[in-house]
Image 1 (cartoon, one colour):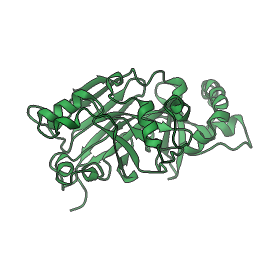
Image 2: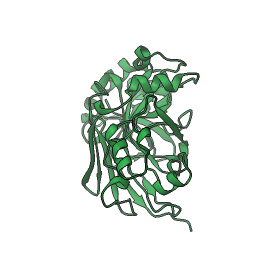
Image 3: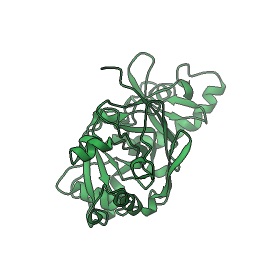
Image 4: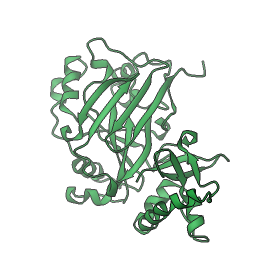
Length: 313
């Protein structure tokens, strides 16, 4: 099951699901067909909050949806995926996007080789956490703005965790009870600003956190700690690794993030990137307007974005 948030033709937002290889079905409209008079959430967070109750309902509706389409009923419910205007899967998360730095040894080692990371920062006993404001979020097919303040725009493909149940001081063995599902993410850093300001400023620019296109609930995903992650730039494979190579696994990351801090439904956690980023290449190839970046975590579809020049001076 692949869920998505999208912008409707009348300018509002709604939620949908893939119904076939090239069709999106609007879930509130589908529910109105099958369950007239019964409300259905129109936001992803609303769906997640009611997931234990609505999951079997949603499974039943999606199983019946092809019949509705074949009968040429359900006007407005079905959209060709190519016409969908995506939103970030969680357009307005409760907090900043949580991020984990240096979570694959090979990525840390390439940073040392490029003389941008100290050797003792690569082998860390505790997760390195920072955050990105929600204004960094960008949907599938959106344009990554190449802001004029950077000359070193990079890419970082990452598995992203979506929190489905709130909590504080969550024990590692209970973490997956608090996870709703997973999506693709691209932590798009401005490396020169990252080094200049010694922190998250270079990670915090508008549109520099593409995410999507879908959320896959955990019940339909399998083991998140054993899937392949790949990044392409203009069709060239730049990153390829398995999440099994993470230094700190998902239970550790969520546990540490929750210590003394309440996690809420819809919170997002990016879990770090493997080796292959632009700045560490023998001849660094930073992103420029016109470049196409694609991120794919196995089972989550492919996140695709084009780098664009800013429209303002």
